[in-house]
Image (cartoon, rainbow, N blue to C red):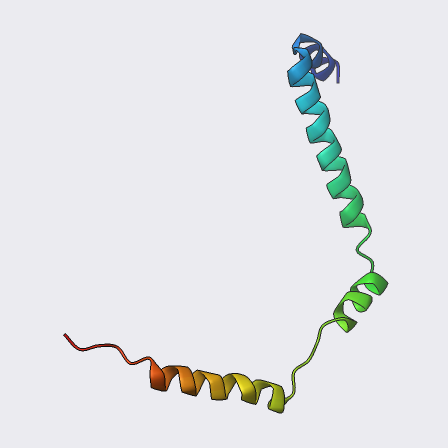
Length: 75
């Protein structure tokens, strides 16, 4: 730990700010990782939408129309 303090004291103010920002980033990442409990995951997964066959049918019709109207030109 003493070597870290020594190296930190050798840095200029700008470099110290960068080190502090990076430490804040790592701590925030660690906090977010700890908050991923099973209940929060269940809430997230319940928010995922599901599509019925009739919803997908509209895309299939549009795909057929697109493929029929966009034919590559022959050279």
